[in-house]
Amino acid sequence: MLAGRDLELVVAHTHGHGDHVGGDDQFDTVVGKSAEAVAEYFGITAWPEQIVEFDLGDRVLDIIAIPGHHPSHVAYYDRSTRLLLTGDSLYAGRLYVFDWPAFRASVARLHGFVAAGNPVDLVLGTHIEMTREPGVDFGLGSDVHPGEHVLELDPAVLTELADVMAAAGETPHRIVRDHFIVFPLSPAGEPL
Ligand SMILES: [Zn+2]
Image 1 (cartoon, helix red, strand yellow):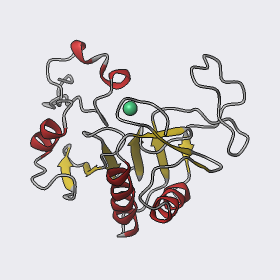
Image 2 (cartoon, helix red, strand yellow):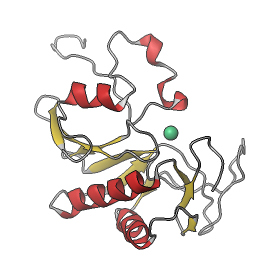
Image 3 (cartoon, protein in one colour):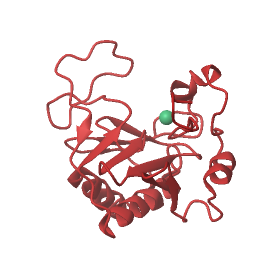
Image 4 (cartoon, helix red, strand yellow):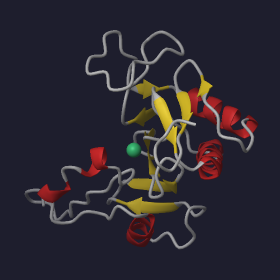
């Protein structure tokens, strides 16, 4: 609680992978890590199609379910800043796709949400694995990133992702673009 303001702290994630939830023990109230828990907390009764609002108090977020990288994955749209938080589903790096059909549907849903009159100034993901050289990523497990791509992405990159995933068909395959690499994995985490 903030001094003088009766505000509840909500700790929510884009998804439940360990590198995103490792600090949860520090908080009393955390939105769960499964799709069911996320849907229940935000009041999503038709997961993943239903897009819901979450009112912080004079500031509304839209919650868009986008499974594919992880079953519980959501994106957050902040109307006041026009930021779209895309977690591990869109960032300047390898977009690890565990569920290809779900990811294709999710990208289409997210792009449709933006195109329906929700303007985005910047897309912010949660990792950087691309260099500043178009289409060139750092090696897996690199612990230094000289010449790293910036974090923020132009919203046109979401349109680009939607276009390539719509055209990609049903067979998972790697897609290298200037600002991201679609990188399908088996359920066991092996590159396809
Ligand atoms: Zn992840």
